[in-house]
Length: 329
Image (cartoon, rainbow, N blue to C red; front, top):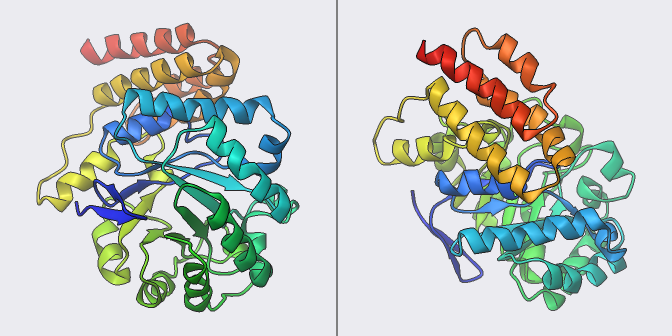
């Protein structure tokens, strides 16, 4: 895979793990990085929560230091969101104080109602002049290169090439573009042609996002001219997708994906998350992730039903141990 640079920082390849709210924590980032992702993202962190020193946000930031301790070369983008310019700007020194990351990414794409009600996420696309002013001030305050993750409009498509060029002109050093408007949420066709138009307008890196899979990523790169591609939902429970893509790009067939290997990866994910978080929180997160590791395999309904009831690491491992014995029988 081709390497690329943002703000003078070299990223080893053009495979990027997308931020997923509630999921892309230390454990998931580690799995993605060790399977070959060049750049990993935190989940969205609230500027307002950090402004008031909320413990969950401080814990998330502490996890970024764990990333760097385990894999010092790992490149991390910290994604933040907020709807009030003054709070966003005031939070940046705090993010730098409590976290350890390479890039500061501002979310202008999240479509969910609870974020929109805060006038954050993709709501910023309804007030672009204020957004440009905010970007200019973010760049002045941040000691890290500032990136923007954006959709291509709110209710209707914007002139995104022009907007991105204006943001580049005030110092934004890269864009991750989800090729849908806010009202399309996560369904319908992705407008890769808009991503291409943005790439042709700006001189900083552009990362293409939206329905990226191992079967279409090469075509997306070719069609958009993007510097990199961002993989989100398709990496949940399947961090091996980054290895698959690296092999495909080298002209090699992906290694076989077996239930045994997926269970081994799930056990590693469990070990990572239960050592990074308190038990109740880790168990809750893994109830939705664990079943994704078994997706596509036959006769796993009973196992999946047991996994979603697990409340401790020991219970997860007991279910998986029984499953491994069944495989070996």
